[in-house]
Image 1 (cartoon, helix red, strand yellow):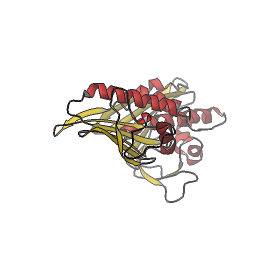
Image 2 (spheres, rainbow, N blue to C red):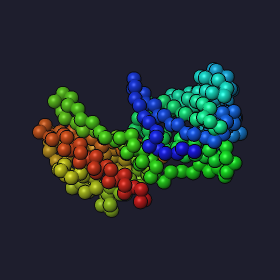
Image 3 (spheres, one colour):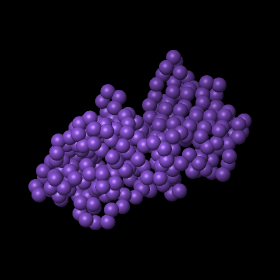
Image 4 (cartoon, rainbow, N blue to C red):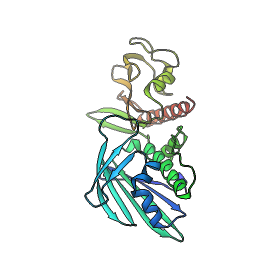
Length: 284
């Protein structure tokens, strides 16, 4: 089975993002169809337990093992056995297309969603799930497992995620970078602070700074979620660690000002700093 993440693509249109994966399976479409539509088979490789009314407009339910409370819901949008199965999952849409490919099949997944920074998490998750589907069809032991982070970071590079942006609104220059990380906020904070806990009024620990961007003094800190420091009345940097895709913390770094800032150089510096942080987190 083809499992090369570099064959996968990401496109954006009308504010939505579409992840496309193609995998060749050595099994006829009828067998693949059963594996992606029958709940007993789905629970062995799909990321949640699934209930489904297999008809257009049919209800779907998604429940993660070990998670209490009501599960997520969806609706079947397309059923064309053994060619097409598509459905909503919350606000996301998933389309599974099966085409004959010699004696086997070509399986194509298109996952459409709103959260562009989460694309690497989704891609890494589906990569492992579809690989498990292939093992199920082959009659081999099935274990989806969790990504240690390397596959996630491969997709970050593949899709060019976390590149950041610069805007100049009302005369205020702002740099913003958002990136999904692979470790929880507490771990990220420990790596950033490196044993020097930030304190308001004191110099910011080096881990929260970037080369060619001045350091300064901490003005606000709420460990392990938020830190702001300033070095100029019109310049500040903030680090925010929030909820992401469930694979780790979502990082947002923002620099505002100063008016004479070289934003291209600063953006490049923050990209380098966050890339280095992501690499350090893989060792945790």
